[in-house]
Length: 102
Image (cartoon, rainbow, N blue to C red; front, top):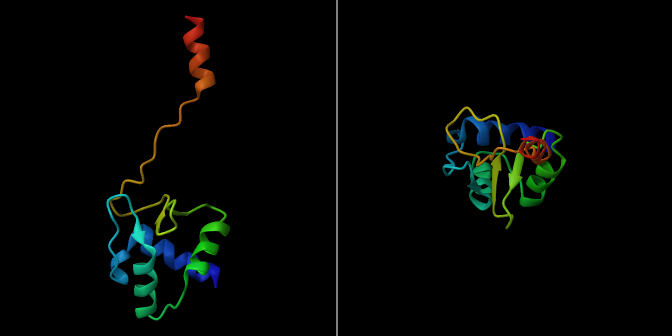
């Protein structure tokens, strides 16, 4: 079940949350209990353990659970407007080299 569930979660969390009536917050998060309830209401029975397995085993790391394991979001590839709070990664070694060479 992980592969079909993973694909459906990608659709919901990256493109069309309205298919099952979930609403993502501005950072793309949705409450897991709400997600599971809406999935069941739309004929896609799942549980928290199956969702955790999808998050853990997805080779492209498409999903993330919050620190309390109460919310989920897609990490990338959204066609809807969300802010996944990415920060620029600075190469400190390169920065220090430039700084020290001037």
